[in-house]
Length: 453
Image (cartoon, rainbow, N blue to C red; front, side, top):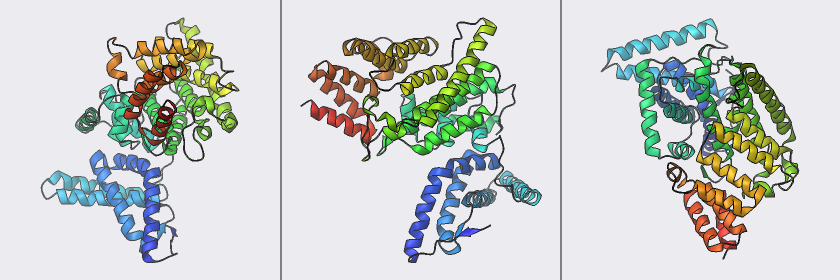
């Protein structure tokens, strides 16, 4: 294995360079490394422990031995042997652990002997991370546990970040993850991409996972940055990989295409969403010349493909109630924004109509909130405020779901501000500020409050 040696500076400086490199590797590659280790070891907790030991070993060894030319296989190999050592230590109390250690060692040796060049870096459709997502989304797991487990174990989101995506508590999410791990272990759920026959029943949860990963990257739950580029890039990568599966029926394949279109259209705004100093810039104030036209063109082309495919399905089966999929409809909304020269030139009537369709197939308070904002742009802030107050009202189910959703209070505050209802605007901005943990959003809300003094 070739090596890249870091030799400039004192031993302390070299060690610090290695630490920074490992921090970067962990952020970018730990998800893929963990997915591979889970496939190889068959155990979530053992794989995670072994991966952390491998990173610690790298920090200890690389300052003197040099950085491997391809660090990822080195980390996987080291983690695997760390896992075998762990099993041997456990074998003092459980003989089955010794048998498992011998099995893993023999399997590893055989793989290296038969194909040393590809034993660690097998590049195929059955990508380890995609394989693990399908495992986590197995039908025997509860639907809410599938998404929570995948976001935590495959994508590395914290329980707090996932809880925000689900509008629930971290404690509830932690319990779901523990139960899901136990179910996979007890039911011996295999680590594999499902067959074409199994794919339709498994695809919905996988699409939801990829969508939530993208959303966390597009608008981070907490921290100093608006976005997390590693998550949006990973979600788009997984979306492209999923397209290669060509799931049946055709409408399912179209929803995969629709999701990728949606992510590309949203991500096209990335460069315009923050100022050079990291301040949040709302859609209405963004410099649209900074939007990525290549991503918009690809997203629109994919959207047209998804729309045609789903329309053919509707016509073939005379199933008007099926309409278009939720991701395709959201992509259509994003495309209207992407193709408009300005907020004023945006076809808000079309956007409201698309939200009407989306509500029919995926009713939720968050979709109602987004529709209310679009109505405000079409009919004025008073009409929008009435809709937002209805969403935040006391009707069953809504208050509990959106009471802690800062965007609902922020949207209400903006409507009140536009209407000159200053006291109400301040109260809603203060609620939103208390609920968000992302620093640019906090700064934006604080500025709005200051402007209302």
